[in-house]
Amino acid sequence: MERIAIVGLGLIGGSLGLDLTRYGHPVVGIARRAETAEEALAMGAVTEAGTELALVTGADVVFICTPIDAVVATAAAIAPYLSTGAVMTDVASVKGELVPSLEALWPGFVGGHPMAGKAEAGLAVAEAGLFQGRPYVLTPTERTVPEALERVRAIAASLGANLCQCHPDQHDRAVAWISHLPVMVSSSLILACQGESDPAILALAQTLASSGFQDTSRVGGGVPELGTLMARHNRTALLDALTQYQHQLEQLKTLIATEDWDAVHTTLTHSQTARSVYLHHRQR
Image (tube, rainbow, N blue to C red):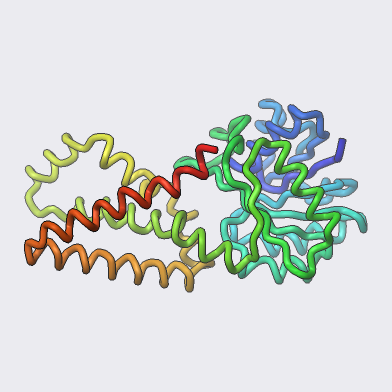
């Protein structure tokens, strides 16, 4: 079994550890706080833990599971401790901005993004089997070492994830549509509702909110720091997606204003049909 190091013991790092220790890998976890390291040990997410980056020494594969804006600095800090054949990978939801810097820091780097988040964050909500049946994107480039790619691919496959491979820039454009845009749209929905000027109507709306509102507002109620990092580090692709979405809203607004109910029905029929294509891949 490969010795694995996980730097960053939040939801993703902790969930990775729970699976990998269960599969027999020795897993060392590194956290900013000693309390987190102790909690990870107690819950069985790691077999060894601490706060010193030097603990990555001797690891065959290192997962960097820090927030997006700390990934490159973390990679630079741990590189001196890694052996020549070690593989480094990350779990960040943005790749185009990070991958070139990480490849320059470590030749055995492979970009990765397991798409299995929650509204909550932190080690306390980590769970075994989190990646089962979920997409796990690998983003190799012409600089990626084939053996390193295969090792990360094998680990991701062992998690029961649905593997996907694409270029870092393709990844960022795609996740802008199906991950980052929904956060901004969902947040805007919540704040638009909050803009109701009549307190009685607002209270009634909050009382009546049911599954439809819960579904469409869920990601907008997620961790603000993560949404901010998405916007900051995938700015260009997200702005393009927001512009297209705004255009779609304006079209629908015009159809309703002009009472073109046939066109409204056609629009909703198209969206009903298209939605199944996005869900199909999650159900396989």
